[in-house]
Length: 115
Length: 112
Image (tube, rainbow over all chains, first blue to last red; front, side, top):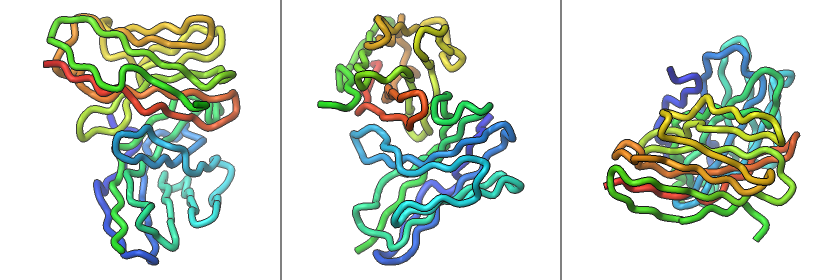
């Protein structure tokens, strides 16, 4: 049972344009959501997070939007840069544990930013 | 370095053999996690250590898998009688009580 779903295995975007990566979840107990970025042969690196008490969190070129009623979150990268090309994982945790609880990850979306 | 380190980086073993994977978390991080990523799959939670509390082992796929964390620092994930379906990248992560998780580079396990 996949509790966190990333339905797009890959996404290709032109440099300078916006990249939108989507994530859906099924467990209403999730209250903390994160995005991780992973380059080949490296571990995932934390990118941005959002608590369920918010609907938007912004950090530079990266913005995460949360729609609790739809159980959907998205990561916007604008403007996209070739160095953003990586696999992006959406993750969720629940029961008030915030970042310390175990995370449930999606299957990832491979973003390719074309120069 | 100051990050999470894992060893070995690659491990090739024969079916039926036991393997041990090591994780050195960031100094001072109280929480330690093991995940694995099989080919074409997302990261699958295996086990979680938090301070002196009993570990959350709910993600371990079978009783062939076990992990320990000695002295609240280094952790070892042991897989007994390895099977081909155990082939994956095994990732370790650590965090402070209220911080994000920092992942190591992973150990790529191949079971022939």
